[in-house]
Length: 83
Image 1 (tube, rainbow, N blue to C red):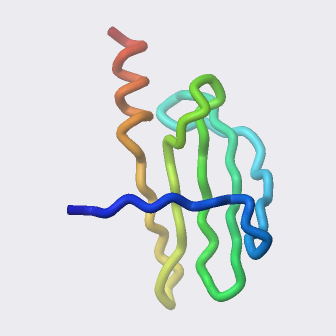
Image 2 (cartoon, rainbow, N blue to C red):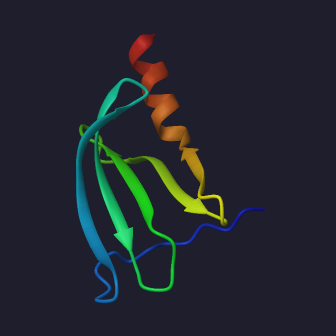
């Protein structure tokens, strides 16, 4: 079972950068880059209307592969709207 962890974004060791607006599953979102020295940057995308996290991505490995995770909230919200 996957363990969920909570990230406290107010830690003084974290750097937050506004990434502007974009779209995920055809929904407007706002992006935030979370950076911490010695760790990979993580990009978080929050739904403008619900304020829920709908996508996260990070780069890993020497090739810079990107791990993108679309969260269930984005698909569920999109399906509810189309019904």
